[in-house]
Image 1 (cartoon, rainbow, N blue to C red):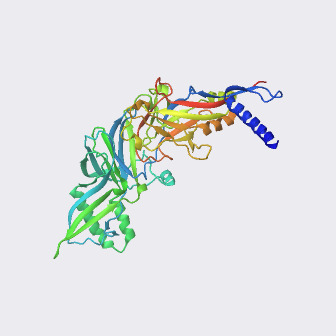
Image 2 (image 1 turned 30 degrees about the vertical axis):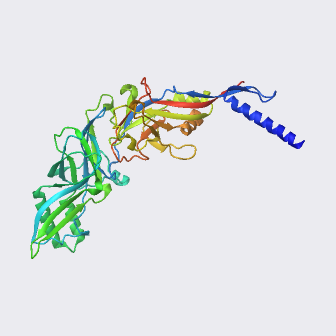
Image 3 (image 1 turned 90 degrees about the vertical axis):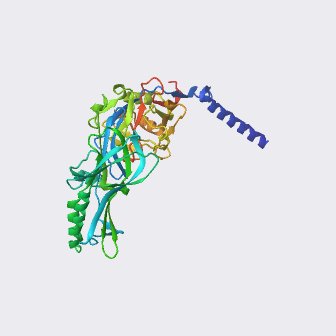
Length: 459
């Protein structure tokens, strides 16, 4: 008898659960005569009127990136991009010991050269050589108060240079990371040798030696030769750069000496980046308060962190207000953002660092990164179609973010949206360029897919 009652109760519970599950497909649910009948269903809407736009930050941190980007290249929409690199060198080192005393009057100058290691990264045409110029700075490479507070240099910073100490041509070598050595001007080498001979007299005063060295060599700049066509831009490892002075002493046997002048610190190397010949629309991006909406920029947006170009996804306030009034709980909200075909190297796309969304307000002030319900930072997932490139896209889970906005209701801020970045932070390690299809294009448009509970209530 007890077992029969228990079975009857279990059957009733199972029946009730089946009725609840069935209600998710628009079935009527009755819970007795004392309840009002209600319909509950899961709906999907991918026609939400979102909007892509592009804005440009005034300056972007380009120091401590471990990349020396040099050269010029033409890119779609944002025109000719130029990059040159500044860095500061430390005092001479011989066999790991920093000293001036190794040089004496019998020492004879041989040669001076610059040593670099190519990262294999490039932008543009790899069949054209880039003629690079090494120039001595005419002023000491120092930070402003703002830069000192940030502990970094920015892409708009420049320093006055004085003379060229050498030039060389380099052919981009994708997928190869060679260590290259180029000879600099002998005039510079003789001046450097003479300076070290003078400093050897102050061997007991390291502080004085340092002061004189900073005057003699305030900093170095590597840039493309003036007048070079924008063909390609290449990257070298910042921690590999050094100037090497070769000399020897004649005696019973010849003693060769090699002095290395290495990078002082990684955060004292930075890239100055700028662009010219920008397409109409994007030429109005003069400060971060300006947004170029997709309708005024060819129905696409730009992401190029080296210059400070960022893609925004705007969700109009009236749309959010309508959701908060008429929609139930959002079950799933997925942003599908399509890559514009031809704006990337299909061989390199799989190596791109994933995109990360951050909250941003109407004044383009970047806020906190987006998190999901589990407290994990949201990361975009690349869906790459090698057979049909125009069908490649990123997906970003905005469920938690959208629900948080809907909870605000009357407090929803005007101009709220998200901004996309290559990595978790605003310090780019490369100059990856990307164009995204806007919401207004006909095929493969960026869109926000929203699944939500729809409650049909009676009052």
